[in-house]
Length: 163
Image (tube, rainbow, N blue to C red; front, side, top):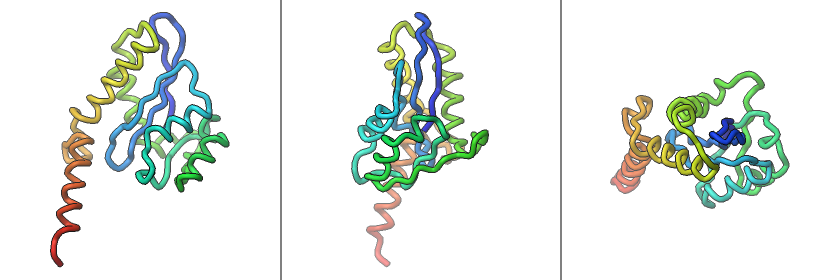
C-alpha cells in the first residue's frame, strides 16, 4: 500500500490509496479522497479484503497512516503482518511503485479531474483496465485477472488429480 498525490482542475489536492497484490499484480483498490486519515485506511482494507482471503503480509512505508494503531489493530485481528520498507528504499515495494508510476503516467497526467467524483470514476476505470486488459510480461503476458483465473484452474486440476 502507498499513496499518490495529485490535484484536479479546481486545485483541491487529493490522495489515492494504492494497493497491489504482489503475487498476481492485481490492484484490488485505488481509493481517492481529499483526506484519507488513519482510520479510513484500515476501514478501506476491511471493506476490500473479504474475511478468509487475507494476505500474509502488507508491505507499507513508514507514513503515519501505515504506522497507526488503527491499521495495526486491523492487521492483527486478521492475522496479517505489516512489513515496513526501510526509509528511502522504495525498491522494497517495487510492484507498488510500478503501479504508482503507471497510474501517474497513464491516468493522473492525462486526465483533467473536475470533481472528486469524476476523479474516482476515472481512476476506477483505469484500475479495471489495468487488472483485466493489460498483459504483464512477468505474468507470462497474461493480465492479472487472467493469471489468477489460470492459477485457480491449475490448482483445481492439480488438487483433483489422482496420485
